[in-house]
Amino acid sequence: MNVKTDTSDACDLRFGQVGMACVRVRRVDAAALCDELERRVRAAPQMFARAAVVLDLSHLLDLPDDGTVDALLEAVRSAGMLPVGLAYGTSETEALARRMGLPLIAKFRAAYEPANGSQVAAAEPAPRTEQPTAVQREPILSAPAAGAMQGAQHHASPVRSGQQIYARDRDLIVTGAIANGAEVIADGNIHIYGGLRGRAMAGAQGDEKARIFVSDFRAELVAIAGHYRVFEQIPDNLEGQSVQCWLEGEKLLIAKL
Image 1 (cartoon, rainbow, N blue to C red):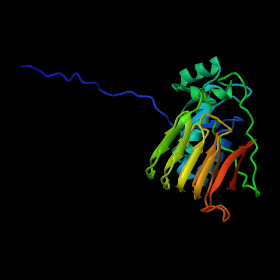
Image 2 (image 1 turned 90 degrees about the horizontal axis):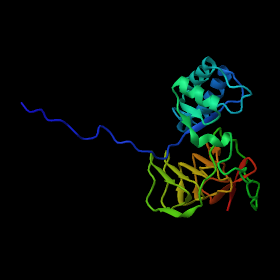
Image 3 (image 1 turned 45 degrees about the vertical axis):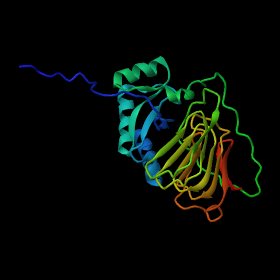
Image 4 (image 1 turned 180 degrees about the horizontal axis):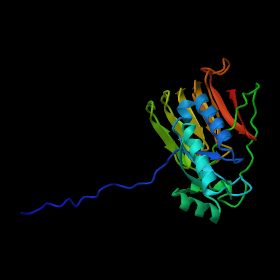
C-alpha cells in the first residue's frame, strides 16, 4: 500500500514590526514593580493589559541573580503584562537570558549604547500661542532610527478598531478616520486629516523631533519617541480641535494649531 507523504512546509516564519513596551527596572523590588505596573494597567487597560514587555536591567548597579530576575518577571505577569525577553546588554545579561530561556531584544540596545555612537539630539522648541498640556513619561525606550527617512506613506481609508498602520523609516499621512482601538505608528511624523479616536505614535524608533498633527483630536493616546499621554477624557480646549504634538525636553506638549 502506498502512503502519501505531505511534503509541504509545516509553517511560515517571518519577522515583522512588533509593538513592545520596555520596563526599565530602577531598583530590585518585585512588590513595588508589581504595584507600579498595576497602576499603569488600571490607568490605560487598552494600552497595557496583556502587553508584551521587555525587562531592561541596565540601570541597576549590579545584575540581579536568577532567582531575583524570576521574581521580577513574575511581578510583571501579576500586574497583567506579559514579559517576553530581556533588553540587549552586556555579556552577563546575555548569559542570564540563556540560563532563563529568554530572548535578548536588540531593539532596546539604546539603553546601553546609541546605535549611531552619539546621543539623541534634543527636541526642537516649538512656537505656540497658548499654554500647552504637559504629559507624563512612558516606560518605553526605543532605539534611534538607523536610516534616512523616505517619502511619506499615505493611507486614505479608515483605520478600523484593532487595525495597525506602520510607516517604517518615513512619515505617515492618514486622510481617513482612526477608530477607537486602532493604531497608527510612524518612525517619522504623523499627519492625520481625519478624526483621531484611537492611538497615534510618532518617532517610533526614537526620533525626538517627530511631531503629530491632527485635524480632529479625540485620541485615546498620543506618543512621541516613548513619551505618551493617555486620555481618559479630552480637555475641553483640545477636544475636536486641530492640534500638534511635540517633545520639549522630556515633556510631550499639545497645543491647538
